[in-house]
Image (cartoon, rainbow, N blue to C red; front, side, top):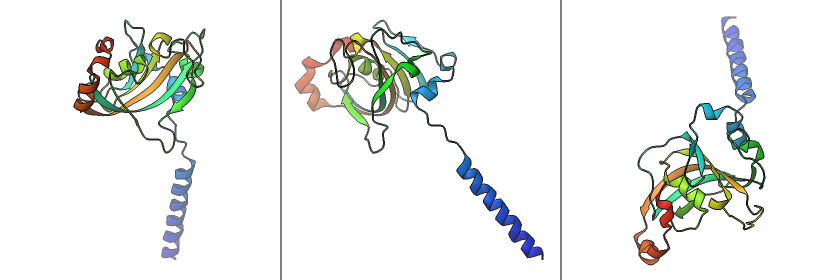
Length: 190
């Protein structure tokens, strides 16, 4: 009789554990989810002279990358149409997602800082990050695509990035020798 009671009790505990495991709701941390809380009271909004605005969700560790270093990032890219007043309170709602390396099966995006292969605002935002850091950046049109239409992004759109710096691979010396003149010198000031 005692063993039956133990088996019954263990069975009930196992069922409860299984029920709890499958009923737990996991929060997916997307830009709108993060911004539905008052993050500006926790994370300081930085406004650069260039017009770039950002705040860090995670600071990261180590040194920040410099021009000529290859970086690896995950990003979710949003845009807001011209005329939409993008603020720290509403850009999670206004932003329309159009690209993401966090999508299933996507590799991190790699680029060399200062070679103008990404919008200037993205490069500027990454340059002051540390490895492991995560940042939300609001890029004004003049640091983004300007008056050009790029894919679904309309001209004069404000770009919004959810960035995570995964790795800094160091200077690409061979690339630097062949492209020194094309480095973006304006982006040295971060």
